[in-house]
Length: 102
Image (cartoon, rainbow, N blue to C red):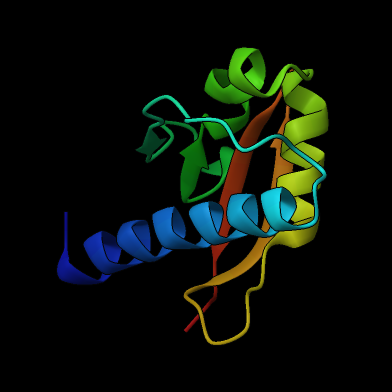
């Protein structure tokens, strides 16, 4: 993975954790430990540059459907000054991220 891709992946992890922290602070989700989640590069580029399973693995801990968690997380994300330009929710709650075009 190139340095830019590694930096984008690390930034994405921070963005997701910050969004989750904001949801906890707003009391929209309970303050529960979140299982380890993955951020991967999808094999199919139409699914974005990165995909995260945080909503899927958090469903039991947060006692909510994964899709609802994904919706709340994506609404709480802040893309200002990041590598990313947009996000999509796929299937039951996977979150796909798209990098800004240079």
